[in-house]
Image (cartoon, rainbow, N blue to C red; front, side, top):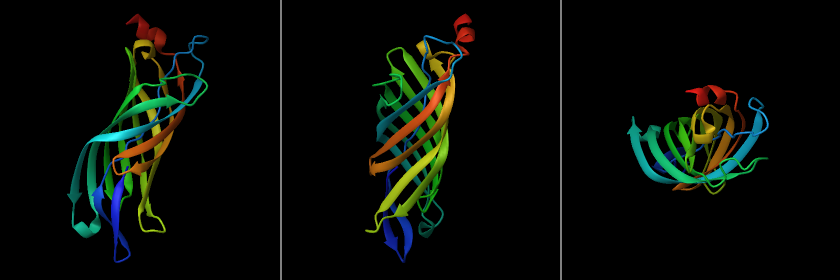
Amino acid sequence: MNVLSSLSGGKLTLAATGLLANLGGFAVVNQNSASEAISISGTFDCTYVKKNVTAIGAPAQAHILLLDVCRGKNASKGPTDYMNGASVQNQEILDLSQGNGPQGGYSTFSKGADSVRVRYQGQVVTTLNANKTPNTTFKGDWTLVTGAGKYAGTSGGSTYSGKAVSKDAVQIDWTGSYSTEGQSAAAAK
């Protein structure tokens, strides 16, 4: 998330806001075992394509509601090539006061006919650097909600963290594991 801020009377106030996107994980198919938990991790830069910022309360409170969409490409960092090069679309809601507060949303990873959607929830923290510019970071948990193609019936989850890299982009790192235990039931449908 990007938050452009100014210092007013020693108190952080939001002059403009970019958004944050983050997220996390997915499911991978392990050819060796249908129920073994497999470690996965990755990273993606997400550029905002839509931002809706609504001020809540008095301007001095710097309380805002953010609705945003960002897009990027995933790069696998784990022991598997899970969703490497997959398109990512992140949709989220943030309820921030002074640049701090909860975030939540969904991220969809798509690569050809294969896709996964994860739900995430976390916290945004904004501090001022020595030069009085905002430093916005976030972290939380993600859970695999649904998969399609070779990811149908998979489950998984773990954590994500990230930071604003500009007013229009965030960088997100995620880690976790997946299981293919539910794939037999999904294939029978």
